[in-house]
Image 1 (cartoon, helix red, strand yellow):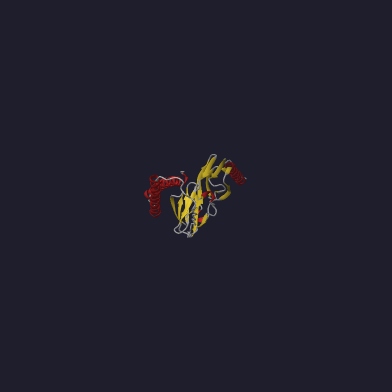
Image 2 (cartoon, helix red, strand yellow):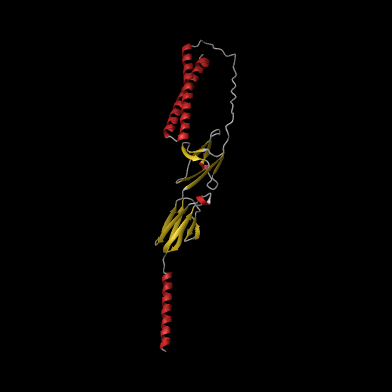
Length: 265
């Protein structure tokens, strides 16, 4: 009888312990977690289990430590995929945000084209892989010797495929300038020689300085492309401004000269 009592007591004690463990396990609190990302539809893994895509709203999880991995959906290759990882101890409702870098891929045919963001920030030569913390806006300019410059609008960029550009070679472009002379044109009144000569000289000077400033601007910009010197870039911009001023003055002088020659009765 004594042995039976001891065994019965032992079994009763084990039953109480198991029941207590179940109660403790079931008493763990659950909290809500929300996960967003700057790219939608990023895949979310909770403790290695896939639970959905961003934005994930009010997903219920038990209290305790958790490992969360958010996979970047904007990747062209596995090797450039970025994962945002969070190691947390969940003890309250929580919100997390995964901010991925923007991955850009530019390629040209032929390769080796210099790539400029907004026409003056050198990114590198194609094929080019480039990460940006913010989404790029505006244009990308591709330049290669003996090929026409190509401007790409970033609004048309596809993060799934990248940008593949076909450059066009420079041709022997000719301009067919045909001037027809009206031999019946004649002056009806006498023209003043001094204003005409002065305007002609101003036109020639304006044309000369326009060409000179433009050549200097081009030379400075080529030096910037070769060296990356910002001083050369500033010099190129300065000479471009002088070129515009000279060109405007030349056109004004030519216009006034034409007026004195043909329209001033």
